[in-house]
Amino acid sequence: MFEARTWKTFRSYEPLGQRVGVALSGGKDSLVALHLAHRYLPPSTELVVISIDEGIEGYRPTTLDEAKKHTEELGLEHVVKTFKEVYGVTLDEIVKVSSRCSGDKDPKAFSPCTYCGVLRRHLLNRSAHELGLDSLITGHTLDDETETILMNYLRGDLGHLMRGSPHPPKKPGFVPRVKPLREAPQKEVTLYALLTSLHPAYVECPYAHLAVRNQYRELLYNLESWDPGVRYSMLRAYDQIVKALRAYYPSPPLNRCHSCGEPTLHTLCRACTLLEKLHLGSQGAEA
Ligand code: SF4
Ligand code: ZN
Image (tube, protein in one colour):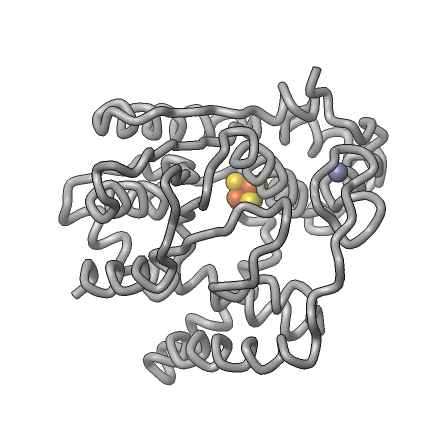
């Protein structure tokens, strides 16, 4: 049932193109997505795996080892990009700089996940472009998707709400995302990983407890236990609503970020804005 549902989701994204990327962190969700993609896609597809090393001591090296092991087993090309090489700074260093800048005593006042998420997405898109990929598969699950929908909805962030839709119109500069697990609850993905002996490493990011989305996750878990299936209905409703919204709010034209050249609605993209905030320079130490 799990695999049949995934194949159906894959089919809804077709055509994926000739050169397809998989964003692999080495955690269970992305490992399951990689193995399913490897089985689903025709052998003629060039599958390229991209991992991002944010520089999180005691966590990322373990998951990257896992990513490397699985990529080698499948005989695939594996590209690893690091925050340090591209932005000149690791996430651990950002956390130090940021707490020094803000002088915050309360660790919850700053969420490393904001920097981590924005920079990771920025780097993934940039790398997917450099590698000439037609689409990029990610391991987002039903849990991730519904948390994001709820978060954007409650914040009244219509722009992000619409951008999360499964099949947004193609935009120049953005490599289309494919989410084969978007209808699969996290628990099923974990069970599938165990039953298929993927043996993912169960390490947790040291900053995970600071993620804002934890609150939304808890809220949705409580709702789900009270009304089973509510997250699935929420996703279905969202997919319908977003189609209607698009007719009323056509996407505004995109600019090129003045600093890095990535597509953005503003003059500076979000990644460069965050880096500037830390006085790290906006170009990213690509050289
Ligand atoms: Fe990054 Fe937050 Fe995930 Fe850690 S928990 S890897 S800081 S997004
Ligand atoms: Zn930029």
